[in-house]
Every structure is written in structure tokens, then in C-alpha cells.
Length: 154
Image 1 (cartoon, rainbow, N blue to C red):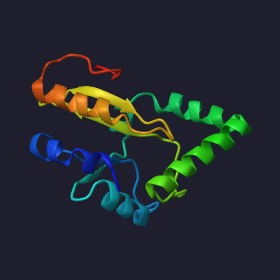
Image 2: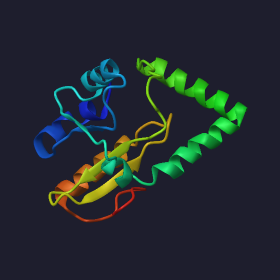
Image 3: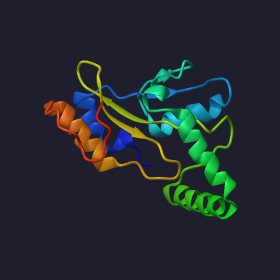
């Protein structure tokens, strides 16, 4: 199973703290444990019930509305669901439909002073921009302070 944690294990283990943030517990703890073991093996998960990290990723309301627009177009919705299902099958990802499911996550890379230097906002069904994330990690490691690709510099 390829995940951000496994793809950059060497880089992250040597130079960065790498952890996951979740927005809720008690809804599907079995699914959360499965998520943790598959995508964050040996790493910590933290609860962000105040949604501080999710808010740092951007206005979740706007992104929820963007997702809602997809539901208003039946053809677009069908194609999206079919494409996501195909990609999940190809990658061996089990789909879990338990929980709220509309709040999207993402990736935040912080510098040594805990300032966010790169933000990627999840787009349901899209592949993670691995090369942009690696470039952001290298940028923070070198502290060049340059903008990285299409990243959102804060």
C-alpha cells in the first residue's frame, strides 16, 4: 500500500515529524484504527475536534459546497463515483461510508518555527501531488523560502 508516509519514509523519519490529524472519534473507531495502520503505520494520530488544522487548510464550507455541486449534477456524480471506485479498487483501498464524510483534509508542511509553508487541500478522488509535497519538504529542509510549484505559500 503506497501512502504519503511510506513514500517518504526516509525523508520524514530523518528530518520531519509526520503525523495524522482526525476530526472525530467514536463514530467508526474500527475504521479509524484501520486507517491508522494502513496510512500512518508507527505514527501518531491526533484529534482536532476544534477543527483548527482543517480550518488552516482553508474554508471547509466552500469546499463542502463545491462537493455539493457535484451531487446536483447526476451525470457528473455518477462519473465521479465510478472513477473514485475504480481508483480505489486499483490501489486496494477499501471504501468506508461511515461518518460525516464532507469535511475534506489535506497536507500541511510546517517549517522548524511551526509556520505553515505548504498547504494542499484534498480534492475528493484526486491523487495526492506527491512531487509537490516532496518539493515542499526539500524546500523547508533547505529553508530556501521559495514558493513550491502550485503550492499555496502562507
